[in-house]
Image (cartoon, rainbow, N blue to C red; front, side, top):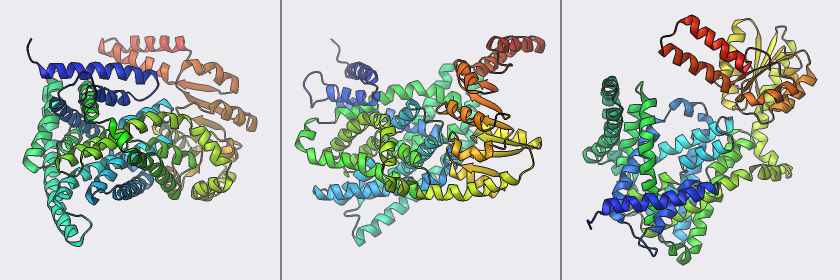
Length: 585
């Protein structure tokens, strides 16, 4: 029998991760919980089969590289800028508060100061995978609340990149809170940042010139295998080069490599090709993290585990909720951000792994992070399901609700009062547009170009304030609340609903119809199956995303088959008649 430790380790890791991933998925929990538990099952700390920990850790390094490469690939500055007024101060403030709370916990249990700092930094950052999953499962990803949470996460990701630079310097300091150590730490950090600046300059500037050209040349060869190999080569080579040439972490180099590839015109295909590799090695990453976890640690240190879990699931959410309220966003946004960040995951383990290499965090630190991750990721979906109940509890306490919503309501009243007066004095035809995403902006531009007056309704305070500064009519508030938009609807000739989600849509249309029976109501809907409901509540016409996608794809296929324009138009009309898209709802 040949000794094949690599094959046996992969077989054990993938099989146990697959089985436990299926179970956690069936239980409507994140599969990450299953992958972490799979590592525990095949670890030296539990009886039964034992995988090669050293090999698993090396494979996990590839997982880290591909995870961070994916983060860089999908990093879009515009997503952050759209919610910068809440995401930047909020994420920084919450990270500082979480780090200080963890520092207090670490000090109470006799840990060194720098270990407490690293523990706090690791616990302050949430899992991208878990947050995206719960937002999509609860149909919040395309809402303003979801956009704020995603922007908040982008800032946390950037802070993680900065911490990856800080950790080696922190490891070289004796006690980071003494005056002498603060000076030496600042000097070491300055050198590290100078190296980082040089590395970023070389990778981003040089990469922007070379990488897109290489990707395009490989694409022209029409070889899927070579293209995938090129993407993998970019991620691992830049990550390894960053470590060897600049002493930076491979995770940081992979993040920058992802940013460079993301600038190319074929970044979407690169992301699609990297996804299967990233997912496979991410499973190995989480499994290897679980292999280093000693389950008996929770029994030996129950109070430390509970204290750290309280920082993650109580301290972080309360800090985030308060910061969102202070900035002036509504309670629902504060709840979505708070509950979405009440967990830790892959970035915590990346920081933990680097900290262990520099002697900043021992086995206890790793164990407590894994324990908190397993528990918080398991409970996070349950917290989201309980959000309506939590919101109802806050409603029943007027003083608390007023405290959390005071600044948002004050801003909204000031803006909306000016709009109310402007609408009342307007003599033009008025269209009320609910939502100001890409669809809403397009409709708004078309109507204004044709001489109509428009009122935009959105729950993003930054968007509303930007529009009002331009002298535009904009209402801040929940677009599906008739009390918010009632004064505009009463005078409107058109109501255009551009929001993709359907929650409370039917109720709003019915209420708007009772208020203004002559108004035309145009609706964006995802599914053709929504037709009957829309007819019943009084919508005039609707655009169904499901049907429009069928038409668009049909046109692409026919054009690629070199059909004539007459044939394409005829087939398009036939598909539209099938779905009855050209008629009223």
